[in-house]
Length: 261
Image 1 (cartoon, helix red, strand yellow):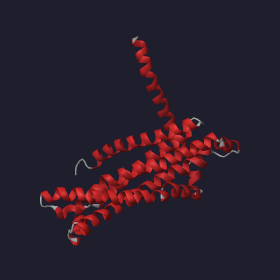
Image 2 (cartoon, rainbow, N blue to C red):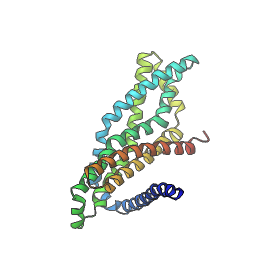
Image 3 (cartoon, rainbow, N blue to C red):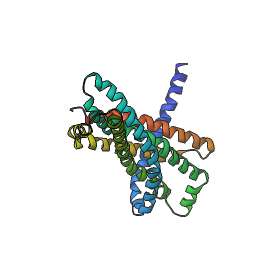
Image 4 (tube, rainbow, N blue to C red):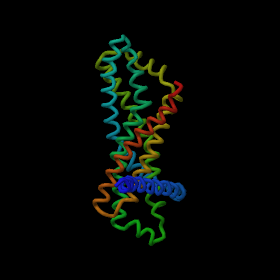
């Protein structure tokens, strides 16, 4: 009885370790063949358009409304302590440090990550990847690496757009709607937001998130069983795993970056 329990417990763990090892080997293969894809920049630029440019609308609209809500909630709290003039600092630091990279990465995983997984999975179902191998074309260099680097490059840019739109939304609510002083809103923000400690750390976070989400997306698509059900489950795993990894990475990176601040 006890043996059967540990057998059932060990099988999923063993499968997870095997999959993790395959993912590490897959990452090494992507890095090894990245030179081939980067020598043909049109492939990577097309994926930047697909993963990044086509995500700008949802990123911008989401950032705008997040900034507006943050300004409304922040003003209500700061007003109790007579510090409503610090609303710009609250909005900017919250977006640049945390909400910008994290929420943008979650949206990126939901829109672009799931689409990349489904696209590669469909190419596997229709045997396009096998056809490339038959023609001596490496599918990792031709299909996987451009999508991976397209996501890695797009993510920091999308996080910056999210933060900028969020700050603008906070400005619309704080200055135009609630009547805060325009100069005070911007001057306190400029005096309190540090480029190295705040902006650069947010960029580093978004780069890590883009690396993780892109790797998960291309790996799940490449590893998906060549069936409709397999692609459906791979797409779901991409979104769920990416979301958990983003939140875990956010905690780890924040602990290292802002420990002494």
